[in-house]
Picture 1 (cartoon, rainbow, N blue to C red):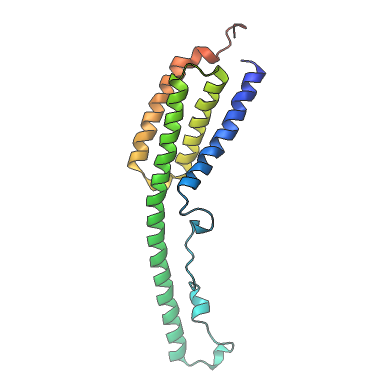
Picture 2 (cartoon, one colour):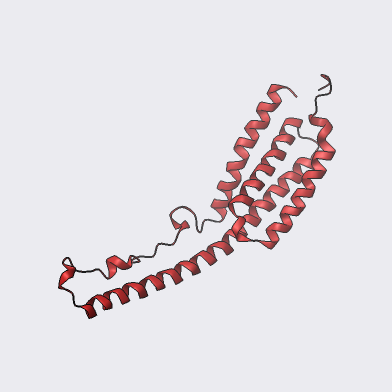
Length: 176
């Protein structure tokens, strides 16, 4: 394989991978950017129920009352955060399925569309595999059963691709 083909492959991969993740964030915008973590308004329990500037003036029951309100506020915050994280995982599971399906479709396109040049086919193949790997690492905690099934299909499609197309990419004594 010559350097020009490798350059084309690299260009395709370098554009394909971010395109997939940006596309996923465009079509699945929730829990991205500043919305990717839990931050309800007024959630700082220590600012919400502060000690006075001079805490030495507090009596023991007053201290206990402030501490109790801070603990209750923190428990409420933790409960809200847990619910947020569960909803986020569910949503990101759908995003992972989208990414994995898109990459599988591109992999199958590269496998069965004979009109593409070898460097384009290899770029799409490597790009879809790299994006699937990146998405699997990124969304590993979603534990998506559908995503796992798609990943298994992608794995076998990749094996089939390598077995079928290996001759196209191996330079046999200058023949290519």
